Length: 57
Image (cartoon, rainbow, N blue to C red; front, top):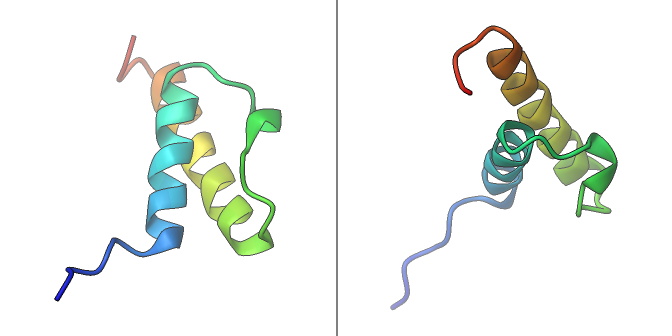
């Protein structure tokens, strides 16, 4: 039996965080589902905040 993948919302948050660290604009969100889009944007916001605080270059 296959192992289950991580939940889709957790993956959306992680992908948003990575996009924010890489300097992508929030308009480039690939999700259409409102819940997934919300998670992606939340991750993106966290990454931008972390980057602005100097945690990442």
